Image 1 (cartoon, rainbow, N blue to C red):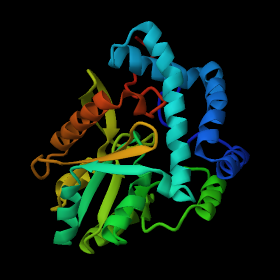
Image 2: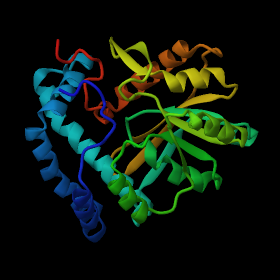
Image 3: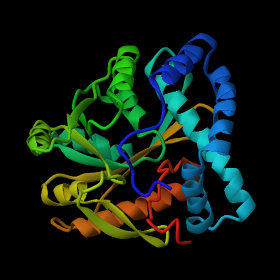
Image 4: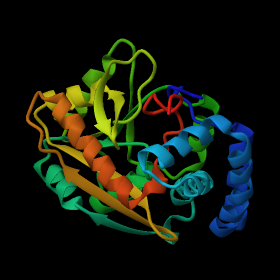
Amino acid sequence: MATEWEGKSKGTLLGYKLYISFLRIFGIGAAYFLLRFVVAYYFFFSFKSSKTIYYYFRKRLKNSVIKSVGNIYNSYYTLGKVLTDRVAISTQFRNKFDYSHDGIEHIDALLKKNKGGILISGHIGNFEIAHYFLQDRYSISKIYMVTTHAEHADIKEYMDGIVAESTMKFIVVENDMSHIFEIHNALDQGGLVVFTGDRYLPGTKVLTERFLGADADFPMGPYLLASRLKVPVLFVYVMKGPKRQYHLFARQAKAKARDAQALLKEYTESMEWILEKYPLQWFNYFDFWKDGIKK
């Protein structure tokens, strides 16, 4: 079993090219149909990730054994549709989707003040499509995603070549900590800096908090930085709804300044609230709680 996130997503460049070509030629519905066969392969042969997602459904959500096994397939299929939608929305199928929101007034307020803000999301739902809708709403170029070099370079280069131009910019985490200066600069310009608050690479400093009834580790950096900077912090998620619908949720953090642990606690509570509504959209396929082997 994978006990830590290894910093890379599964998939080969050839696999991406073939699937995306199929999507672009035959459309979203046909891609969803093909996806069922791809998902069946992962259901039967990806034992490590299946074991960890089974643990999530059985031990953390308290589903029955039968429901937990069935939800392994449902989880893979939901992830596949989310990844398909990510490509579809960023290419020629963008107008095929409906988009609604709950709490977007918090983002409105941040941008009107032009003093910057921090958004913390996670590997649930489909946050990576948010900027395509935000840029339509605001006509801005002030969204910065903090990321790593971890993804396959060839896949990233291919994806950059086919997706529609986006106003989202990227701040890459560097060993020399130069990304901290980029984050400060983005905030000084009134930008929104986005962190994913649920994954960390081996060797990274962590904070521990209760999440879905058990202790789990989270990267210290986003919470330490966000709690020390004098800017508002929002928890923001973009979740897949029925058919071709997406819903954005934004909630403002209330933790006091310089209290990273309290900010993390608010974050875990916000994720629990979201996962109660969308339990199939938890996409961390590794031993997140570090006790999946023991229980």
